Length: 337
Image 1 (cartoon, rainbow, N blue to C red):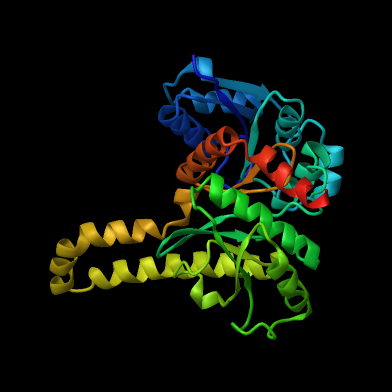
Image 2: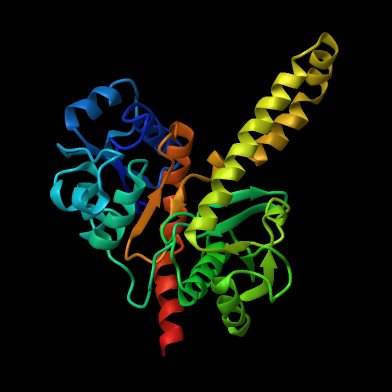
């Protein structure tokens, strides 16, 4: 019998909880037979939602948590005071080795704080970053960091580059991934103080394939596999990427249905267009892993529907089976020796 990857899911977090969270969890179980899902939340509410579905009961467990951390609550205070919240209880399962990974769509701040305070950092990791995959013309690129460290130092960005390279090589199967730092121009002398200090440090790294600067307009073309920045710039890139994508898809659909001629044309191009638009759908990659922790923590969008939740859970299986945490630990600690 194959070993199951155990994923603890915050069933109460996000705008669409528990409805979409439970649905996504059940869908993930149908796709991956090597998966066990532990839904953490108010048991009566979660079980009521589960009654809508048929699933393998031997691979789904419900763990009760009476409290919920709301989006507007101060993260540190919430994690420390709400000991029986779904986020805290689920993360403790990871810490205690009862689960391999955590997935949550709730408060980003609480997930980030809980990841560091409860799950804990790998020794040698200065700041764990959030690293989502962005769809590109060539497949996908890793944006690191997009929300965890708005005031990063050069040494943090160097570690982001190393952890991102390990992730892309092992999870996405890209050999010798190209690493670039976000900048306002291609020239080495451009950028703010952080970029100017970090650039030569990345050039000196022997264990990454650093190709220089990347401008935001070159990200969608897949110019680099690992895109390094602090979280302030990263979050702006991520949100603009998602916003432009959603608006463009909406405008294309409206344009194709505006006249009889365009409707006829739409029927002809629909299969090819649907496939192209699907490739640029960020939901297909699931959430953003928080790299550099002792256990896997994945933050998915607060507005996530079942498809994002499902893909975030499935992402944890690949991450765990590839032994990502051990590889990151080995990579970071090798630089210290």
